[in-house]
Length: 100
Length: 168
Image (cartoon, rainbow over the protein chains, first blue to last red):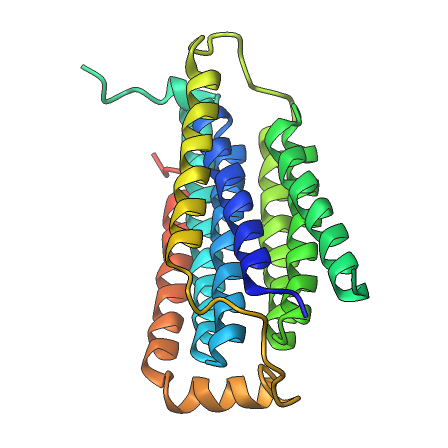
């Protein structure tokens, strides 16, 4: 059997890559995808710990996270489309209308 | 090296490679396709971790619905690369070093606090099966489940309101 630490290390690496994507990329859609990657990394840790503690609640929580992610993606992509209609760009550096 | 471990390592390499591909590819379409590959490997990890129901939900909801939505929007906005040259020069190195710090912190917490992290015990075959999940979902977690449906409804209404063109 594979020790749970391997899964957690993998989850940590995936989470870091997702955080790097949010920090380094400027395309709003790619930033959004990086957020999805971070959610998935957290889900993987949840499932690994659910397996370790033999608690099904962890898996239920992942189920809820998937649902919330679906709602979040729908609203977020609608926001990106609305911003694109206004500014003709989804580069996050150009979304600075509130800047004084 | 047991077959399990070899399978895990290959899958982990594919998963990390796909995540890096998502991070580094210039085109948003390639990023989305790399992310689909990453989600599929994570679904296989769920199967390895005795969560077959979640694996199927992952494939249908994430790799199916969510990524198709992403590809739709990318195609709608035009798949051209929009990463301009007006990047802040120090942004990439700072992001990279902060990412390394984050990884180091997670690793420190893991190996400093994880006392009971041992190999897995064997479980009954029905752990994580749709029957057990459904039983918990509709008994113990009924109210969160209902709230989730309200959340999805609100999300749907929000999308309709946001994407509606102005009449005037």
